[in-house]
Length: 339
Ligand SMILES: [Zn+2]
Image (cartoon, rainbow, N blue to C red; front, top):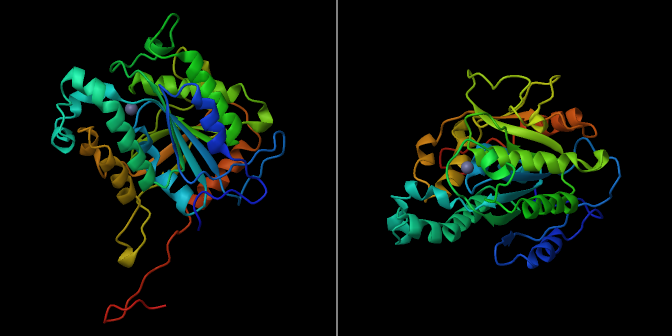
């Protein structure tokens, strides 16, 4: 299937729209515009529930956060012909402490705080672009807000008087992206207590932006978390204390994408491989690679923000993501492909 192709007649040049929006903020913002493919408009039109090419926006805090749902993105793009975009709020420069192995790769003393904070934004953006290329992501939008430090408290960036991020600008950028992207789904991290406060904040800001849209134009908001097949999901329904916008629907549990779906010659391949490609792109982050190959399921909770046909739309997406993607390969004794 083709990549990122919206249906004919439904296209609008989002790349140009984003460029125009960001032009006045060029000093702090960089945009990767992929194939400059169009997206659908039609405000107020009923949404299809199945069998069209899905459009997905991921809102995350750092380059590498997309790896939590890498298999899902890859298969949406390559099996369903969908369009996946990622909006990244910071450049992840606070990760300098984990850059030891990347110092040889980049020829910089990245673990030095001053060097790391000045050099990592460009490096991590380049790594993010490479991961996006592996996952066939269409566009990456970088907002280049400050990655100030590790914290589990989203209040450090969202609280009253917080000045770490330019919140008005971030909110406007997310709203603009949602408005012009006409997305079917928004993926964020489920803001579980143990996750980074920036992850929680990115999710909260995205959910607030979705909730502010007219109901008939809202994408379905899904919160991702990793799981093993015998693991326990987070509490159900989910709610992060102090942030009612994070409440998940109580009438559905979760949808899962199985990274271990087998395919290829002798069924030796699965989607953990493309996830590992994306993880490997983020070379300046030396600890995440320790998790390579772990996590069999990419799981998603649905937030309680109402959207048209939210459950059938999501059912249709994950039903299609469970389809076999690749035809079985067979070879004769001489190694020739049998048709
Ligand atoms: Zn992160």
